[in-house]
Length: 74
Image (cartoon, rainbow, N blue to C red):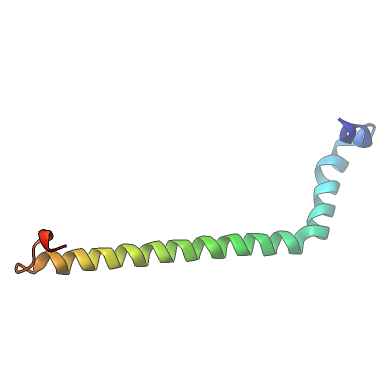
């Protein structure tokens, strides 16, 4: 692997501390934007699922309570 040759001979803390800190500083805004987008998307999906489930619950509750209609009408 070509990446191992770059870090040979360097102290362990350069590989495990300095390099990740540099990457977070350089790409931190991009990472934060991507995480914010994913969390927002997940929140919207959960809200949509809850609203759909609530609508289905209400329709079944009120459609089931009316005794004049039967399931064969559908």
